[in-house]
Amino acid sequence: MFSDFKKELLPFEQQTKIPQDRLKAILPPSFLAAGLTYKEYDGNLILSPSGPGNKLQVTFKGETYDNIIEQIIDQNPELEHVRDQITPDNLNKVLYRTQTTLTFERDTPIYLNNQEMKVDDLRTGRGLKGDDSIQIKALAPKKDTFLTFEFGGESINLGLKPIPMHTDELLHLYVLQSPSDKVLQLTIKIPDEKNKSFNLTFNINLAKAKNVKEIVDLKPLLENVISGKEIKINGKDLGLKSEGFPQLTPLRVSLEEYEKLLEIEQYYNVTFGVNKNFTDSDISKIDALYDTVIQDNKYAELNIVDKVWNVSGAEIKGDAVGKLVNVVIPQQDENLTILGVSIPKLKSIKLLYQFKVESVSDEGAKLKATKYSSFLIKFLKKNEGTDDFSEISLEMLRDKAGSTAG
View 1 (tube, rainbow, N blue to C red):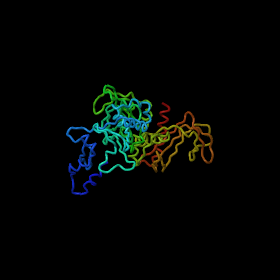
View 2: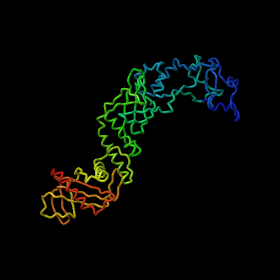
View 3: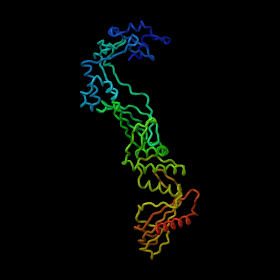
View 4: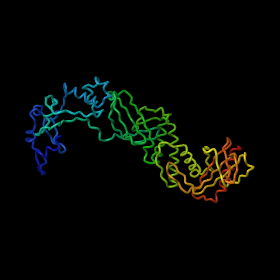
């Protein structure tokens, strides 16, 4: 309100201090009676007690106080049912926790250090004009409170801030919350009574991660959160222990897939986006590529999605109709798309194991999966070429036949 008044009083750049007699001269009589004066602070004029050690006390009575309650309820209708529980003793708490802004018109009566005056008295040599009013708002904390949370030995440092509350809980507790743009968001409800325990809740959203590596780095900690581990705050054991979150068990699958994706990223020099949900197709592709290239397994066995296959080039004769056969399908320059990212020029070998021949024609053979059938796939490493197709496919077939016989 008084940010420009210094310039109006003393429009000289070289002037750094306002003489006290000039400050006293612009004080309304009601301010003088209340023992108040103006003091400079950071380029502004601040209304302060004139005597050392005195405090500035603002009091609202009667209609002004009733109007404050009305403004709180208007801005926080969820508190209507606890209107009568908002008292002078907890008013500051309610204003702070709801972050409610109070507006007072120029003719509103207030008390400063028990001296009655109007809002209009808060002018400084120039009257409030038109619909001018003053506002009072609780300042939100500018800085986060950083705490280190430890879950079964895995720790994370999070900044927390009080958040505006709009339920009757604010009468008994306050809430601190970490930023919502992080994979792990923590909310702490701290009761006003010191002997009561506080509540800690978690929200895990993998889609908030900036990249796959961030999720993989958090994987051990998130797994401990899901399974339920001892919780420490700033290294102190507060006797907190999560019972775990069985409903989040499917999240473990996603964490495992992201761990595989990171190694695939590094091997093929590609970058995957962060996806909240994996489809069955995504998981099949990731597992097949990871198992056979990164882990160098002989093959990956996938669920048979396509029950009927039309194959050409396979040496299947007409007398094979009705019989079970094994068919190798080598492929060069295959483009594999995972989560919208294409990995080009892959070499792969697919093995249709124990598929039934339905029919044979000049165009090829029609095969159908049975209860004995398996679908195997092997992606070749970068240093493996088409010359290796025959040896790799035979090894796949021998290994599968051996495991079936066993």
